[in-house]
Length: 452
Image (tube, rainbow, N blue to C red; front, side, top):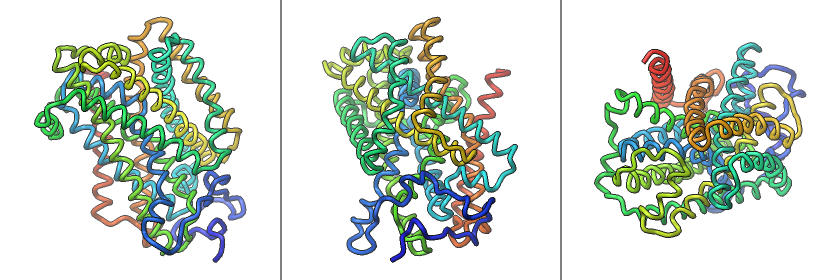
């Protein structure tokens, strides 16, 4: 059998710019490096494809989610559970489209944009992506610094500066192999899930109220404060850089580069991401449920900061280790997010600019850009300022979503580009509807912020 890494992509379904010999696959150092069994039981192929979905799911439960979910639960009880559920369903659809683009075309989303759009448009899209990475990095710096303060008493400014050291974490993990990187991420996800499972058990929230919270209400759109938090949740859940990340890392599997091989790879990649994102739904819902049960129902609706939540959780839940579990999960979330955001930044820079710089250098650059505002805001306004900055970073992420969603949907719904792998009409309509909802919510938030 020929080496899948050397097999051509379906060039008849897509017109790429530049000569063939100049093309470099996404993340070429690990491209098609993970073996996929061609025969045997289905479980073997599923296990071979398990990993990218969990790496993508990290972005759906990073420290930015904590701020918006805590604020939503404390202020509005279980009402915004419906927003978490709907945004998670949007994420499942969009990540499936992202995997389809990568598997079918052999290009990640950044490379596809470069080959389709003009240079000015590509520069604008790249800048939007970099802004999203910085906003995500901002949340990671704040979340990790807060976790270090809660667990070890390290001051916020010192903790923020210490996060620069994680620039070398991805380099270390990648040197051990992509499977090792995925295992590291999954292990930390398990830690987060266990921590929140114990907290939910201790909180014993009313099941009826939780189920009612999953039913959407018009109040979410008409109430500006609720809408602000809701869009923050969407921004924290559907992460722009994850669409670029997923379209690249699905190509680490050495599936057969034929129509049959791509169809099989697509099935298992979507299964992997759907299962992983259901875990993200559980964790995001768990954060909001714990906040609603512990804070909203006890009259602490003003709890919007992670530090406040840490201090109140143990006494309110009656579980001595609740606060420690909360901080451990936060630290695991921050470390995990560092790994995937670094990888996404590399993919975006290489895809849009064809620029390759050492991973540690790129990471130090973006991390430094995120550290500066955290240090300044912490010095001027203390913990309250960093909490507001954390929520604001998620709203910025939400505002960047259309710049990733629209090109993605545009590509996968184009039959000339995708050939027989173009999405069905029903999925295309649903995909454009999701893009439209994101645009409308963003425009409403912007209008209310400027004129309301």
